[in-house]
Image: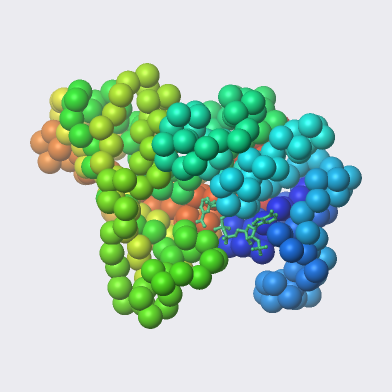
Amino acid sequence: MINVAIVGVSGFTGLELVRILLHHNKFHINYVSNSTGGQSLAQIHPELHGVLDMAVSKTSIEDIADKSQLVFLAVPHQTAMSIVPKLLQKGLKIVDLSADYRLDVATYETAYCPHTDQTNLPYATYGLPEFYSKDIAATSLVANPGCYPTASLLGLMPFVPYIKPNTPVFIDAKSGVSGAGKKLNATTSYMHIQENSFAYNPLAHRHSYEITYILKNLTQQSWDINFVPHILPVSRGMLTSIYVQLDQTIDPNKILKEYYKADRFIRIRTSPPTIKETSHTNFCDIFVATKGQNLFINTSIDNLSRGASSQAVVNANIMYGLDERLGV
Ligand SMILES: NC(=O)c1ccc[n+]([C@@H]2O[C@H](COP(=O)([O-])OP(=O)(O)OC[C@H]3O[C@@H](n4cnc5c(N)ncnc54)[C@H](OP(=O)(O)O)[C@@H]3O)[C@@H](O)[C@H]2O)c1
């Protein structure tokens, strides 16, 4: 068995990691922590009562290194990059769910804040397995992708060769409330969110930098990404509706099937997917339609699963040379 630590176990993606890893036959949860410690897992997550009621520690690098070989960081950005250098020094493998290692310094500092671990940043691998599995298998530090970038990039990539050059790409995306994490705020309070829906950070959301940066990295081309996220009054789930102009007429389903023929977590759909159909799974469901040379791409994922924790476990499976489907 490979001993595993979950740092940030008290959050939404931390709980999701516990749920997934409980069913994993090679990874054993041996250490869990948050910023304070002092409680049991079942006190923090009562649904784990009688299932896994271990002590939640205050995060300690020494204890993580003593008790684990693989670490999932389910903590906010900035916190992750304050921990990663010490964990790498201890020889641990890391899957970081935060944004800290997904971008280059310039892009990160434009979208987030000053980067405090520029030494290790170049050695991180972006953890979108459909495109980077060889690199993931060879690295000790995986930057698990953001939820919106996962749903957007998986939809867009098959059609890159057919998109009319120098035309904008429009991504209209929607997320369940858990995408914002457990911290309470006025925007995601029940009174504001129930029976309500709205755009936020239109054309300026941090994930538009990530989508643009990774797309450029994958295609060696520049992109005009116009990304508008919306909140849905549901706890989990994510949809994207992507609109692009093509430079030729295509059979989009034929292209999709060929592109993803070896990928087990992509499902090509003949009708638009709902968020319930991918809920609690690592699937990304994709539906496409064309009108002349206009293409509509529709993707559905679960933001907490494929958008975070199940994708993190798939990445860890690949890092250890295991079947990528183990546990998920
Ligand atoms: N939610 C999503 O759909 C989603 C999707 C993709 C990626 N992500 C990313 O995944 C990360 C976690 O997201 P989340 O939604 O699970 O956030 P969350 O619900 O707010 O949980 C974050 C957790 O990090 C813990 N934490 C903060 N500082 C810590 C420290 N020094 N040591 C240990 N734990 C610490 C907090 O513990 P306390 O209990 O002590 O406050 C909190 O429980 C974030 O970087 C987020 O951007 C989230």
